[in-house]
Length: 160
Image (tube, rainbow, N blue to C red):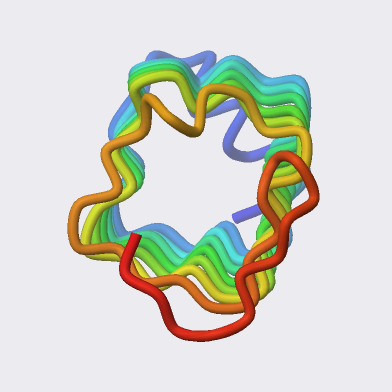
């Protein structure tokens, strides 16, 4: 399914898109807030600027996805593959990212106020300029080669 088909189905009132393959679709600027995209292949999708507040993306393959400037407030991204995803300047306030893959991920300038990034591996993740890191729940998260908000780099394995 491509982005146009998704928009058509969305306009027709469909809100549960669990299990679909939207790999590489471009739905930037869309507003699928509070929809359900469980166990779906969204690798390489362009969601820059999208309003995804309250959206459930649990178990989705979001590798290489572009979430730059997206609103992910209260979104559920548990068990997702977020390898090489771009969250530059995204709003992740109160978002849940439990047991996700955050390797080679750009989170520079992201707002992480009260986000839950738990039981996760952060590797080669850029958090430079990210906001509210001290308010994040990092329980069980391990990091390596992490660039922090002030430019500090954590090079070796480290429990947050």
